Length: 300
Image (cartoon, rainbow, N blue to C red; front, top):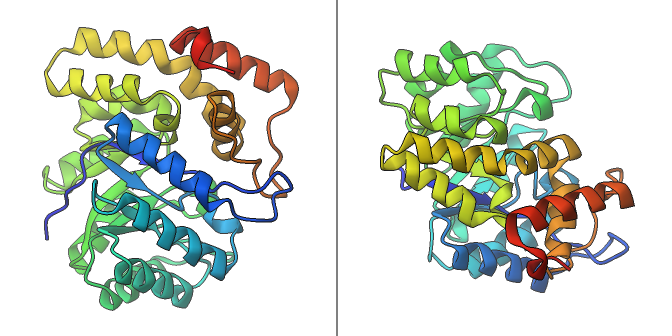
């Protein structure tokens, strides 16, 4: 099973009304249109940036369906279907497949710490329920589960449609190990913004990033420089955007990306509680970073 994913994979936000209670689907469509027009290679709705964990089942379905309708196969789509239960993840994966997703992403979320056998069965159950490729997502900061490379490769070997890995631990050695132990046959993707350059050099097929909502040109230029073998240019491009990459990671992706979109002319509400939006001081810092990268005329 081939995977069409490479380059810059842009993560979407989930816009809310100012009070945070209602979905703003028109704003979601506008944000997706911005990503497509910017030239990103793929789009990934409902991940951590998209606050999928804070949506009701009905809201999740509305956002998934509307996102896929807006994308309309113009670029490949990968929908995050992670849920606290295997049944919930299976239900979401089937829904994503029915509505035209090209792949799904699965984080092994759980309240209780999962054993390796439980993690494997979780992926096996989802894989058996759909025909789509699955991106295995390793992010212990949000899931509470850290999958070692050996376990990841075991899952890839045992579940036919687990064909790619998103690695977000912030440990570049994980990516090197995936490359070596996987014998270069398992596509992996960087999920830690400050590691973008190192990840590409280590062999990452792509960069999954919410930063594409704010600085897609710089993200794309970095990927293109690495692909062309121009590491000097790639380093310059990476260090130019690094202050913003650090800021959005430390400030929380939903809060920082939503504030950044508002500053660039697209109000999308604040994160859903319990997550707060940025305070005035953080917004001023973000505005300064965006001004430096884009120029005053692009920032409200």
